[in-house]
Length: 117
Length: 237
Image (cartoon, rainbow over all chains, first blue to last red):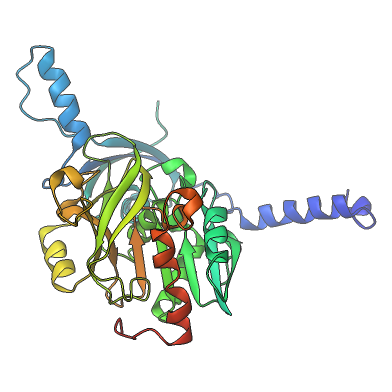
């Protein structure tokens, strides 16, 4: 293909994109242990949770004495890290930078060594 | 010529509407830039349009904020250049911390696609110069437009005059019935402390010519020309 790329502009573009993709990819870690983080994201205590309110209404209509429902989400991440401290640091970056918005949400997580069963 | 960069992310859908609406404003030209290689040098203003970037996964606007365009936007905003975010663009700017607050699911859990009224609360932004007190009619189309903030943040935003648009009825009354999504204090749009970054849930680009049922969006976008020509009162500084 590299030979073809020297005279075929389509192959040249294809090859250049492949190179770009490879360059962007994070290198595979070598023999680092795997960790599984289970991250729970929940609306902060004083933030309205309209989904929780709708679920509360539905559960009460089943005849259950439900007084409050808060909804959130659970995100399970498998990652490689040098050790537990490094894995915890990575999970904190995930929580602070993307998975939770500190204006409206809190998060908590559990970390286990190994991959999910 | 005033040059405007319109950012396009995967899932942006209002960039061409914005380009068309901006083409109606005299001495303004715009380019649509792909977010991964957006370079804002040489532009006077940037627009972050509406859409459903990255499928609204995680939270609306959350994944888009990881884009390299966010760093570029922050640099651009810090340099005092003009930024406008509408709908998903507003959500992205809040997620990125360029605007205060966050946008939650609409309180009725309903996607609202409707025309609303909002009152211009402050003319101390380049986008709203001369519009203070005006009641504008604009379309909305969103499921996560319920603006919220902590009590302290709301108090700061209100006392700094950073609430720029508030949902009202057609006479300018901020009643609960006129609030389409349960936004705290009926907030429809806010600005940053520097007052050069403005975000709002409604769509000015969809009401910029009479054929589309309204021209109030044009009144906001048309402020670009005087803001750039230096003929607008520089009250937002």
